[in-house]
Amino acid sequence: MSEDGKQKISESLSQNSTAGRQDNTHWCCNINPGTEALTRTRQTTYAVQRHSRTKCGYSDCGLFGWSSCTKWCDNYWTELQYGVETYLAYQDRICPAANLVCCAGYITVINHCFTYAEVMNNKDILEIIVAMGIPINPTMG
Image 1 (cartoon, helix red, strand yellow):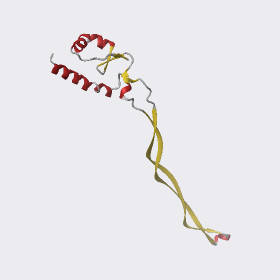
Image 2 (image 1 turned 180 degrees about the vertical axis):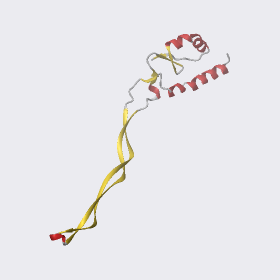
Image 3 (image 1 turned 60 degrees about the horizontal axis):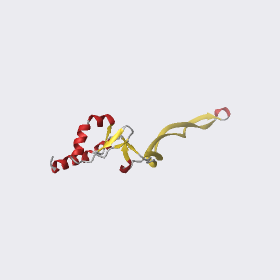
Image 4 (image 1 turned 135 degrees about the vertical axis):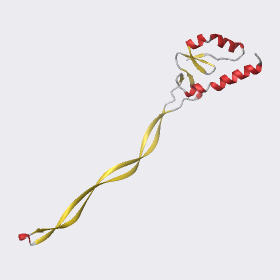
């Protein structure tokens, strides 16, 4: 195979090498990146019970009912009030790219994670790639 063909295959494999990292299925982090606490805010709505007392007429009172007394009425209603609440949210930190490795049971070949069975079933293809001079850099997870 020509050098140009080898270069195209190598570039194709390298371009696809980051596509699997979007999945996270077979990639693990060899360090614990930790968790960070983030301060977040949110709008809140809550109901407040209100009360008022108003004059609503007069009633007879006093000796023999000859006087008049103010009659009071109680009114109740609910008002919505709005506020802003601050709270903590915990988020896992992203693993640095330098610390991404294949999980246990997988082998890294050309920046992809494969099961042992996949590697063994495709041994002839991998041998062709190595024969073309493309390094496969196998590492075990």
